Image (cartoon, rainbow over all chains, first blue to last red; front, side, top):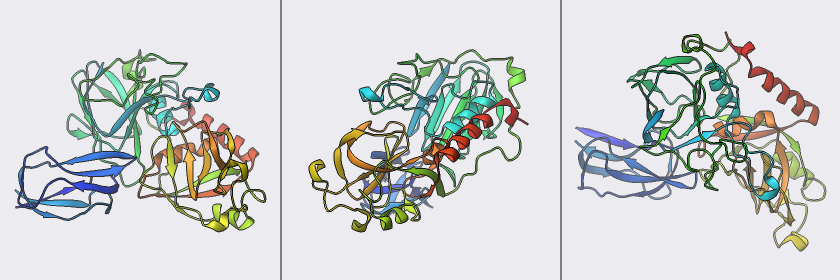
Length: 72
Length: 327
């Protein structure tokens, strides 16, 4: 089953810190959002394997936008 | 006692009107970014409108109460829950010792939400205010945003808890949240014809400015202005750019600073002086709207008003934060 890790704040993608094929644990940081001149970590709510990375640095985000797809 | 389980993105102790009287020494006033939402949260739990509460920016606060009390949540709808059940907003609710309140991400409208607690948050006042200045690292709870493990003392409620629970606002009192915020503003001190062209002032009071993602409690950055905005080719003795002037005091909160081509609203924790021109000042009664403006999503327009309308709006807002607004 697939599950997306979504943006929790509006802002810009600072970076994605996982690659396709990586094993991700529940609570692990998978990406970082830049908002309010602060770097805000985005953690996975599920354990799984990274299937797809949907965003890249500087991409504009709104709350709920999918950033990474996991196979769980 | 309120025990913080998850400090979320940025949760601060803030009161209103903040730390007044120290601008001349370089200390901004701080205070609730949306003083209206904090005021209603306080009113609902029986506090004075300016009592210290929690300002929750971005969301994800989780906290547990170590005693029975009454709370109210106002501002953007972060889908708050109490022990996992939906917690109604804009009304006062009794909570028991051991209850846990939890917030999600920002709502469809607005950016900040406020948690008022009967008796307020009991942190020591520093220079007359309980407000946090995060950039200065003073005031509030240890001069910083809250983190897991923090334990906040609560003040003494102003009435019996059973009388303070279940209070609601009258219909029509609750502020209207949007994604396009119209701010009433008074032009000045640096305007047309000396610093800004007539065309530039017309643009300022007609354009819709998107709020840049690099906006926080110190400053809200807006879309850049064109070269035609400026009446001067350079800043003269103030500097090379036409937005430069000799250093002067900034009329915070609410000054629109023109920094290069970028208009920047100077607000809660903003700088108190500098060498850039200021083209308008948002009226006091509309400062709360900036605090609900969502960086990277919402937009701002300015509507020109005079001093009389600004004074009347401030008076009306003060009257709104009274028991007469309760149902």
